[in-house]
Image (cartoon, rainbow over all chains, first blue to last red; front, side, top):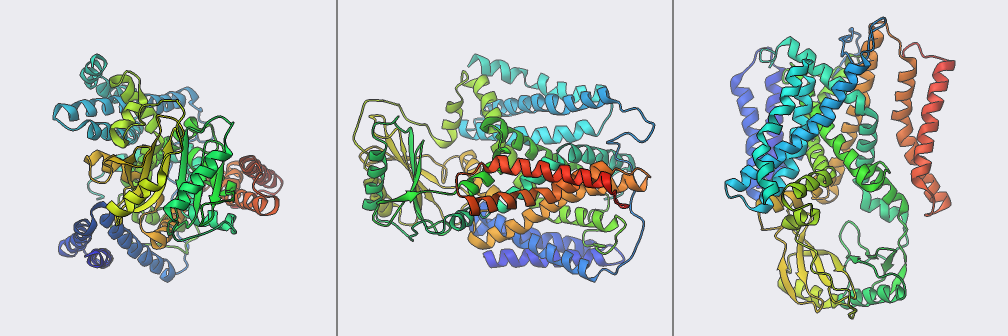
Length: 187
Length: 429
């Protein structure tokens, strides 16, 4: 079963390579590629749960990296102009530094994001316990939720420069967590 | 994909990606590189101390003898709170006892063979875990880096509108920045499952202290240990009254009889030689991601219970699975090699990200000689400084201050790169 898991993953990557190398998109080939990868992961799960999925995904990633290495090897030497798109991290010559604005953004993303993520974590625990999850499950949920939610919030907060929207992103989780915080402090 | 994501969104995602990457790039690079090397922590220990006694297994009576010898050697000193016996495994076929103040190897008979001398391997792992900062601060900083790595993954995916169409396009020989961007983007896409797994488990492990404190403050009256006890089991009731050495051999004998399919990796004595002492055995389960199950015994070696990491609540199993998944220790040497290659790719992604940003600025007419030189210093200096610490270990022994050597060497290399660029700026920098 594990061999099948690895094999399906490799065949899935091969199918995607073939599909995406064509001039026109093929829904059938794309679907076949993704389904083979899915079948590989499913076979890994049936064989040995999370361990099997991990092993099957390593085979698929290895196949993709080998195909990438072949693409790199076959690529002819050439010179085309690289991107010069602005990322906006540093000011261009003559532009103001906007230091206060940058420090505020940093504080909102790091400080505000962490507080909001913890609030969502506490709320998640409360919600899990409300639907009769075990205490262990509820606590572990928070351990995974806080870093995951913080990373998503960091991304969302940096996707907008509008301060009002950023503050709403921080405030909503805090407001939503009030019942959980009140209930928790009373227990 | 390109139709789904608007141009403005891509531009904003790229800005977010650059902001996070440049803010944390150097530390992410150091943590990625050290994590990649530390995949071989067990092998490095064997290289570092070649002549330590090795064995495929050890008799339980010999283990008991070793425990008694180590505890006897600490008579008259402050009592150790824990004693850990590492039992021989395929990756590290050594028997080593660690207390609060010392670590020694045992030979096959259970006699103390000599001190454990793996200071460089431990330095490497500490550099990865805490960046050599004080433990709680350091592991939290590294946990935050895990969060930033997750955010980089999300923003990177959104910033690549042709993520699927270009997934196998790698213009490796294009020297005008296109090749560098292709390497960065393609490696990022195809190592994404690995990166997400590493970043999430790393962030979870690193931020556990803050998270546990938050849960404890809200629901356990500030008792952080009570939070962990729901997942990994509790410490037991302490009683400082003196007691004889616990019967570890009986616990190991029970494990061999009742759980022959479980590979015993550790025996831990909690509060040894006190009335509150108990023995905990860690058993590794084949084809599982969990680091092991805790089997609890009393001081007489009588079995009491398991913690439930192997077959308890889903949350317990998930929490116990984070460690092997992060460190790549769930499939022997083949998985370690895969993790090494994927980790090297992740390290290359960290390195190329800043070079891509510098290249874009250069093509807009802004030469950043100093920044380019400093980044060269980080990228080349980190492996060089690690090599210097390893040479110091080989030439001068186990007692060197490896963290000081590493950071001073890295600072010196970065300063040299900066001075060299001021003296002779590269036309391409």
